[in-house]
Image 1 (cartoon, helix red, strand yellow):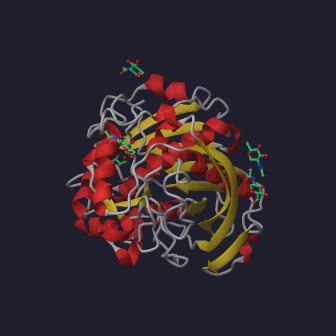
Image 2 (tube, rainbow, N blue to C red):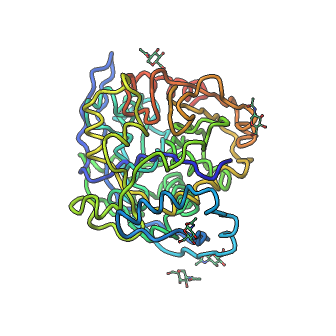
Image 3 (cartoon, rainbow, N blue to C red):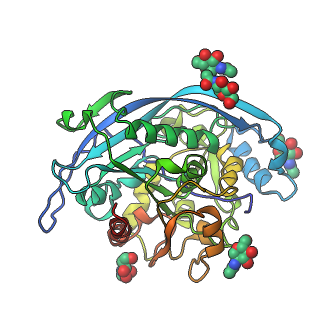
Length: 402
Ligand SMILES: *[C@@H]1O[C@H](CO)[C@@H](O)[C@H](O)[C@H]1NC(C)=O
Ligand SMILES: *[C@@H]1O[C@H](CO)[C@@H](O)[C@H](O)[C@H]1NC(C)=O
Ligand SMILES: *[C@@H]1O[C@H](CO)[C@@H](O)[C@H](O)[C@H]1NC(C)=O
Ligand SMILES: *[C@@H]1O[C@H](CO)[C@@H](O)[C@H](O)[C@H]1NC(C)=O
Ligand SMILES: *[C@@H]1O[C@H](CO)[C@@H](O)[C@H](O)[C@H]1NC(C)=O
C-alpha cells in the first residue's frame, strides 16, 4: 500500500459544552439524548518510531515538510523501524457519551466513533441543521448509545509531541482502552465528568452489551489497526472514507496546503507546539472533503470554523495500518464511501472496489459490504443527503442484529 496516504481525519472537538439535544421530529419516536462530557485518563505504553521528519516551526517549514514528505527519494519509513521510541504516558481524552431515552431499542449497543485528520469529534455532530447532518443524532434517534472523543492533538484532549507521540500506534491503544473501559462498565468511573445535559445518573452505570466501531478516514485506519491487534473487542465495524481500491494512497498530502498551526491562527491554535500543521483555506478543505453540488456552502464555512491541527507524525505512521489482517475480528464490516471521494479513491470510487484487499484485511469478517453514497466527496457528514447515508449504515447494522 502506498506510503503517502492522505486520509482526512475529522475530529469532533469537544469545545462545545454538552450539546443540548435538538429533538428531531420523527414518525413516532422523538429522542432526547442525554450526554456527559468526560475527561478520561488513558494510560498508554507502546512503541512508536522516530521517522526522520523535518521539524515544523513556521509556515516555511510546513511547506518544506509537504515537499519533503512527498519527495520520491526522501522517505524510507522501513529504516525508521529501527529507531524505536517508548511512549509511556497517560493522556487526558475529552470524550462525550450520549444515551437515548430509557427504553430505546438499542440503548445497550454502543457506537464508538473515530473521526479523521483535521477534525475533532464534531465531525459526528455537525451543529448546522443537525437533523440532516448529525450522525450522533441519527444514531440516538435509532436508539443507539454513542461515544465520541477528541483524538490526541485535537479538541480538548492532550496535545503531546507531534513527531513521536502523534502516531497510529498510540491512537490504536487509546481507542482500545476507551472500548475496554466502556465494555467493562468503567467509563464514567474512570473519568472526570465535566458537564452533563441533564440526568447524569442515567449513564453512571452504563455498560453496553455490544460495541460497534465507526471510523472516518484516518479514524478508519486507527480502527483497522485496533482490529488487527484486538479484533475481539468489536462486534461490528463501519469504515467510512476508507474504500479498498488500488487508488487508495495515490493522492498524497502534496495536493493540500498546510501551514504551521500556531502561525496560521494564533488565537485558535496558540497552544499547539512544534510539528502541528493545519489545512489553510476553504478551498483546500473543499478539494479534500467535498463534492461540488453535493454540499451547501454554509457547511464549508462551518468546516473552516471547526478544522483542527494534525501532528506530522500521523503521516508516516498511518501507513502501517494497512499491513496485517484482522484475523480475530469476526463481526460484520461495511466500507462506506462517497462516490467521488478525492483522497480516498483519487476522485472516483465507482467500479474499483477490490475484494481481494478487503478479504486480505478482514479475513474472518462476515458480510463485507462496500457502499457508495451518491454525489458525495470524502466527508460524508458534511454532504447533502447525509442522513440518507446514515440510514444505509444503520440498516446494515440492524440486519446483523446490531
Ligand atoms: C511497557 O511495555 C514494555 C514493552 O512492551 C514492557 O516491558 C513494560 O513492562 C511495560 N510497562 C508497563 C508499566 O506496563
Ligand atoms: C527530508 O527531511 C529529512 C529530515 O530533515 C532529511 O534528512 C532529508 O534529507 C530530507 N530529504 C530531502 C530530499 O530533502
Ligand atoms: C512507565 O510509566 C510508569 C508510570 O508513570 C512508570 O512507573 C514506569 O517506570 C515507566 N516505565 C518506563 C520504562 O519508562
Ligand atoms: C486487487 O489488489 C491486488 C493487490 O494490490 C491486486 O493484485 C489485484 O490486481 C487487484 N484486483 C483488481 C481487480 O484490481
Ligand atoms: C441519497 O442517499 C440515498 C442512500 O444512499 C440514495 O439511495 C439516494 O439515491 C440519494 N439521493 C440522491 C439525490 O443522491
